[in-house]
View 1 (cartoon, rainbow, N blue to C red):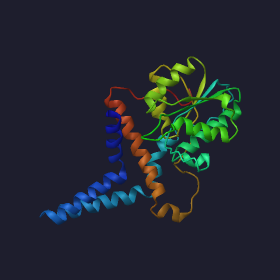
View 2: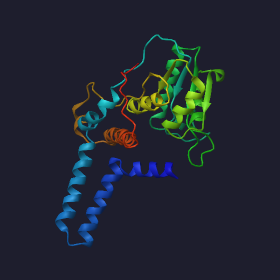
View 3: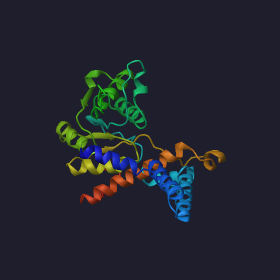
View 4: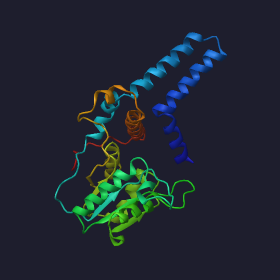
Length: 261
């Protein structure tokens, strides 16, 4: 119950649903009350915020501090395990395996496979429980993709009970012990993920995937035209910031370890 409440509350605080709710409030004020000026102000401010958060310069400026904290891992240290955290997914057996990984999940698995190719003696651990009424878990679907990309089943291990990052850290601890391991998750999620793993006494090597904040050249119109792509970048920045605030409210201090340590 608490898990569902956390997800629903967090989802409503993301830019698109939150601003749509504000616009709805403004419309109600215009149609059902005498507070015409207040209604116009709420709608105007909501529209302006939605516009700004849908523009690349602002969206990626918000996301960059999270996205760039941990560099891509190309180190030579050998590891025994590569842990790939779960993400969005579905399961349709008629689809290509990779099509069942949604949003951030496919880049995570791709980076996990890349790191395994650099450490073929290691074991790939996929985490993530089944969502809703789905018959398959996030971990299982990710493993199917890894196998389709050439990773032998003998080098894959599933942890399909954890429902969030805190649970994933606890589950991984029971498997890896003191062994060195890479932690693969989205770059913007890595700061919070590292904190959760440090909290259970583990010292993962950060191997971020799915970097989103663009600092390389773009066409001028791509920066100037609002897009759902840039809005999704703003959403990730807000989501991870809310998650970090929740950690602080629980009395957990922000992680102070240096990237890659």
